[in-house]
Length: 260
Image 1 (cartoon, rainbow, N blue to C red):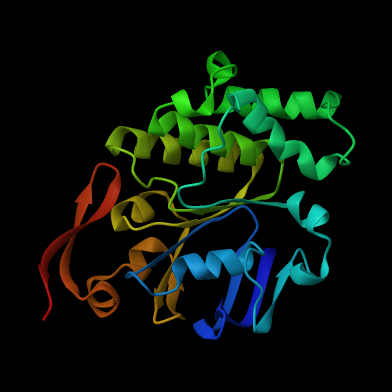
Image 2 (tube, rainbow, N blue to C red; image 1 turned 180 degrees about the vertical axis):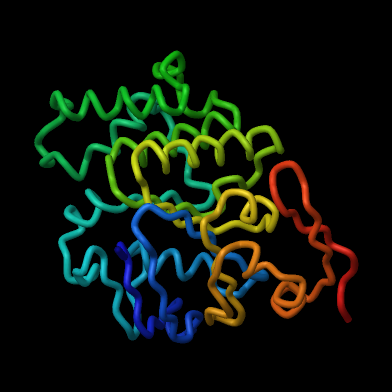
């Protein structure tokens, strides 16, 4: 069953059209990764799906309903978006930041978390291994801890869908794997639908159920990682020659040379 059905989607920034007409279906419970060269429209597509940008044409159905015709509060109870390099709010503790994930479930005059809110915040802190740091100011966290804090904020929304734009940006190899392993665990435990934008082809190959390759604002192909990330398609989209090798964690991509 599809959680998203996207038809002839177009959009961008002002008069600059980036997304050129995309048809895409996302299955409930799957992990879809969007890949493409710089400027191909990956982040723009994610912002359109997450209602950060409004489309100039086309339609996005979330659970069968037009996402742009639904109240923002209702959408936020179904979908959470973690942007690339989110701004670090000054003066907030980890607990206070994560508690913001409960805003879609409360009215503006409700300052205290209700019982369900406390439960979800506690769950999010535990899942991201931040319970011991809940009273620590955000600005005192390491890069990996900050990323986990913002992920906990998204988890506290208790949504069905997570949209993540470059969740491993600026993280070293250890924290990249830590974040993606956590997401993989949550996908299985909570049957989450995850849509990520990544730059690392091998991480996409390792964790995704399907991969969508983008080129010039259009969907070049979408398939299982081993099929979508063939040497021929990688050469066409990224302009490099690669070899595919078998490893203990599955197939991985080895860049050989840039194609002139």
